[in-house]
Amino acid sequence: PPPEIKLPPTPEVPPRPVEEGKIVYLKMAELHPFHTFREHPYKVQDDKGMDDLVGTIKEHGIMTPATVRPEKDGKGYEIIAGHTRWTAAQELELATVPCIVAQLSDADADIMMAETNIQRPDWLPSERAKTYKVWLEAVQTETGITQGQRTDTTSGTECPKLGRNRDVAAQRFGIGPKTLDMYIKLNDLIPELLDMVDANAVDSKTGIQVKAG
Image (cartoon, rainbow, N blue to C red; front, side, top):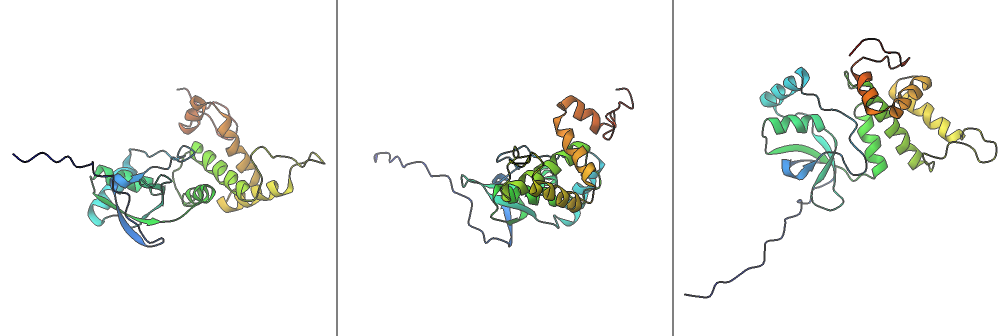
């Protein structure tokens, strides 16, 4: 018999090149949740809203494409906006998801992730808290103010640029500056207390327990 020929293993095929800004259908295996340098702030709920979304996608398909950016290792795409649609697509065992590929820095990805969720009707206090903090930190990164740079080095007062960023954040999200600060402070709670806030066991404004459980 002829000698057996051993070929080298086939290299993993990288994601196909796509044109930025245009809708392309990406394989489910190519898509990964937001994870590059922080945990995704939103909880995908298995509730009636998800059931309704699954039913809508089953009947009409995904009408709004997800926004993704190429992974830094070149092995897939990171979801910036569209996690709930991606989860529903998994439940329906869809092969592909319509996406728009964008080249985004970490700060730009954070800002887009936060701003695409402004109109969420049912987001939890913990999600608001993380979103506002993510947005503010991203804008501070772009303006050259780090998270630890809180005061002016000469006067000891709050850096004016940081204060302006907070005012812009409050206006962008349609809340008052004090409300913004209140939500950001929720990030200092231990996870168990934050879960209680989400469950309405603790009033997010006063911190007072309002029901047992």
